[in-house]
Amino acid sequence: MVTLVVATTSDPASINPAKELLAMPGWQTGPTLEAGIRSFQNGDVRILEQDKSIIQEDDLDLRWEAATKETVEEIIFLSKHTAVSNRAALTIHPIGIPHLKEGDVPPQGGRAGWAAPPSPRMGPWLTLLKKIAHSNNLVPEFEITLEATHHGPITTKPTMFVEIGSTHEYWVRQDAAHVIALLIWEGLGLGEDAAVGNWSSQTEQKKVILGIGGGHYVPRHMDVILKNSVWVGHLLSGYSLPMEDPGQSKGETSAESIGGTWKQSIKVSFDATVAAFPGGEILAHLDQKSFKSWQKNAITDFLGKQGIKIGKPGDFS
Image 1 (tube, helix red, strand yellow):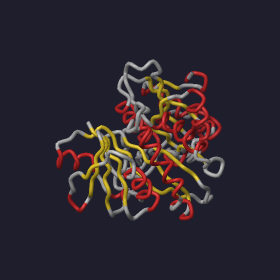
Image 2 (cartoon, one colour):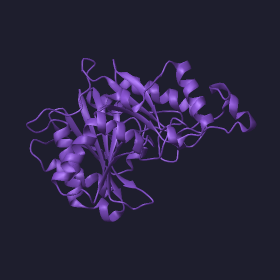
Image 3 (spheres, helix red, strand yellow):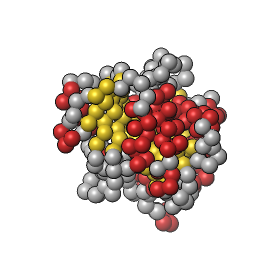
Image 4 (spheres, helix red, strand yellow):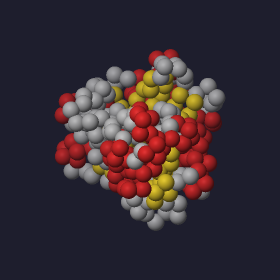
């Protein structure tokens, strides 16, 4: 079982952390895949270095397995982050576009109505990233945050993106690249200590958050995650929950009465989270303040009919 760490030379926020990681001991040259994708190996970790946009590189897990006969356990993509705020940030997020309907053209890779299994490492790595960033004096200049589920590429194994944002000034920062490299090194157990964030159905803390609602940086879900060291599943912001306003019938809303792809988005994301955390207890956490009453009623009704438990902040401790 191997972990793929994917970087592209077309993005300084991607290739610079990969170079920092390769400067650490133990790496050897591995096989070259089709399209000139180069690889390096260290224990059970494989760095894949390519020249194209990584959000367009679908099925890298399956392609690696076919070429090497190695089983891929998880994928970590290194990438730049962009934001209107231009704020310096180090971010982690799951991927998918579960709200798009069949026939929609994905704007940033992936497949309409799909979500990859979220990497179980995201929650523990958020805490680890905060620690490493503090010790390397990147905080408070850099915000350390999760992002909501978005974009591609298509994968079938537990996946996360780790990003440096949000402008070219920060994408090329070598100190930020070094922090991300340390996150990978320590998080995957390449140094002297054990890996961080390995999921086991035997773990004492089995609660996994499925975030529903809120903004792109999921602040209310973040509060629960950091306070309780909870495992992190998919995080659906408001834009991933398209709901058609019922007009005058708002007082009698149910899941069936509200159109839009929001139900598909929740179900796809829940199923992908279940797949990533076998034996886990998945709890939906609603950003209550981000919903109108008819939206909250419809979502609560749908979750109940799907057998998806709802957790209040205190239920995750």
